[in-house]
Image (cartoon, rainbow, N blue to C red; front, side, top):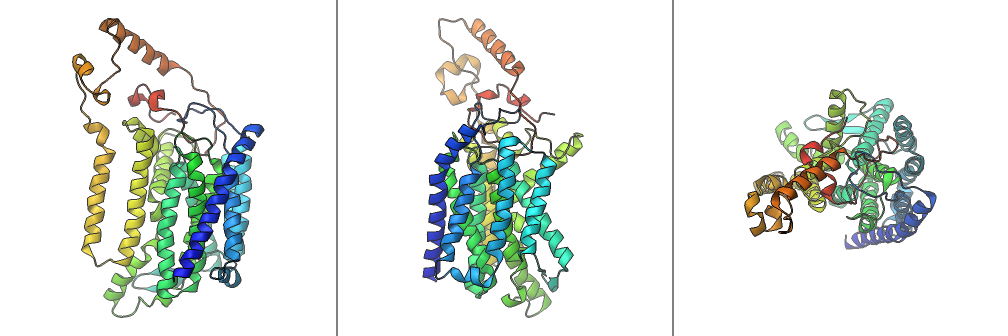
Length: 450
């Protein structure tokens, strides 16, 4: 079992290295071609930043698949299954659409159609959901149309969930990397724990996906030097969806032999094992929750579901007082808690300590989430005697009277609130952040924009 782990590690490292080394030249190419759109009303960064980071990520994907094809322990994945070729075909199509959008800002409906076509291309080559395991019932086979519709829906939802969460430096790449790591552990257990060869493609996809994200993150952490754009966010969303489809629709649940015994025992045994299978989107629960809330919020306000706004979860974290880096780390924490918590529960559902640990970590996460609300603020007359984090405003020089300082601050805040923001062409692709949080002088008014 050690040898396949080394092969996966080699594939991951090669993918990460290729992605990392190509991101620098891609950044220069994006600047030369003008792939630096103007700042939009929903953006957090203050200066135009090049996109097209998905170009480096796509070539990292190709390098990972090429290396895996020449490794002895992973070559069987390409010989026994057509899923790697199906993934590459769909990824190439969605990548081209993303590159065009990063440069020319294509219409949202065109991108949606491209996502559906990319999913259809994968379905035509065999990467589709064939059956669904139901605890207490067994395996439910799907017709060709049912499998196709379910596969396309899963691909489109996952792509847009990742796209919607791409709003801060390093957020989307980090969250997808966490999700891929959790999926890798689960699919690896299915493959080598139950000796089910059909789980091998999903294990390979998640290893390559981790490499793509890890190679791009050093360039995308705050302050970001390049954004992945739609060419990157849609690409990693499609790869993650392909892994979920592969492990869900290709692994025969009867081979796990968990439906044996009484109905109650079979149901109890099947439920934790199939949580990541029946609900693969729980691995990216945070992006999916953000997607659902965005659709409900925009529809409730009479807007198009594809209309961009500033009501995403990461925007809310900035509004309540978190710094850029802390907001990203909080999102990482909740993604890891949900993803690895689900996988751990699927392995040891009878262990109560896992449930208690998840509950305890959730309580810690809530405290961290609401920490800015608990920060005490000193009165204005005492601000000069307390650390800066407890002050309501910066202490002015003693040469300036307090009354004039407060009037100047109020005038400055009013000017910043009325200052126009450069708005580019509308689109649904996520925007990442570079600038400090001082762009929002009054957080109570930095909410969703109609």
